[in-house]
Length: 194
Image (cartoon, rainbow, N blue to C red; front, side):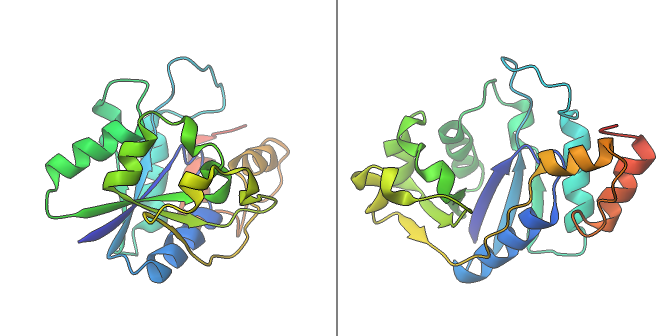
């Protein structure tokens, strides 16, 4: 099975995440996309970051009608801070018949050479890169930009951020159409981000 791994805090998951996952799945001919919910970094304090289980629950709610998308809490039980290379290694051992690819926005590719053991990721996993608004790949190191493991895919340029959504909630502005209806209901019921 070909699986794309879409890492993020998903605080909250929004319609942009869903559009990107669905589009990348099609263009990269993946069987599934797993949303890997990243735990809170213990070295960073963030009052707006919801607990891991709540962010996972919102991902589950947002994708419950699409069997090709899956929520993953794999990093919740891993040592922190979690590094992508360690998560990939763990998943490869646990699912030896799966082929994993990393789904990255083009903005992250510019800093990819700073990631822990980035060459190991390039050598053993595919990297699927979707465009992000206002990002140029000129800053990307040539060895990364032209690496055969990296595949650029078409995707809409979506400029929705979780920060914008949280600010809407704080300012009592509707988040309808920015998040899945079930996610909006969950946030409202729990009175999150107020």
